[in-house]
Length: 342
Image (cartoon, rainbow, N blue to C red; front, top):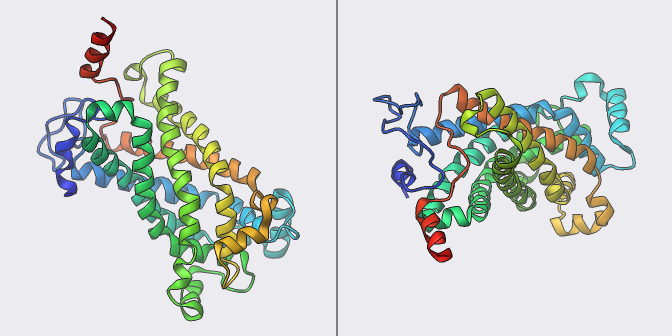
């Protein structure tokens, strides 16, 4: 399917909201002053840019916590808790040691964000068009789940090489201190397999995480505006809308962390141990071992997810992109339901 034709599908989508008749190429914009037309190629490109900024920045910001979390997972005897992990790391490596792995984190999650957010918008449009306007509303949670899973499948392929390098830098003392040192060493020791040996467990971790991240966020946002926010979204200021976005993002992040944590532990351990499979690592860790580091991950992922949605939405505001309100029941479906009651 040609991405540039997807804007035609948006005209019948319950997720479109008010859109203008202008082109994103600058000929004209919508009546609301949008910089581009919802569902156009330019719109999807800007969504990808928002994903780069959102994921790249937030993951890099929490590198110290991520480093301690990974070390707790692969060496729980040495790194007994979050505070102990920070103390040991500071004692051995100093302040600089807490930034280990920042480069693969930044580049890896920027690429992942491009695919995660950009392709999510694309797949949501395509799947919505495939099942029709009424089904898109009735089955919107399933639509969010399917679109986010599809996007994350490709996002993890982009992330995997950098994630593998990050884990080695953070958890294998003496292996490499920088990305420039790690990449050629990985290639020399294990070949291309080094970059993708953790892809399957990465899918196991990230796909459920992303499905929860998007579906829970979308539905939580819908519920907050329906039952908590005292006025319709259209009457809220941009600042108030961003606060609601942050709240919905944090709630989604807590669930994300719990759902994806066992697979995250396997990924960390798998990239440390050569020649092991995901099943062997999981069996060796045991049930309790799979949940090591959950508390710091809840704090990290909750904050991270909320920040990502806040930044992503803020980028849309900054770039004057269309931001449709939560989906509403199509008029045709309302008439059908009223006819049944009559």
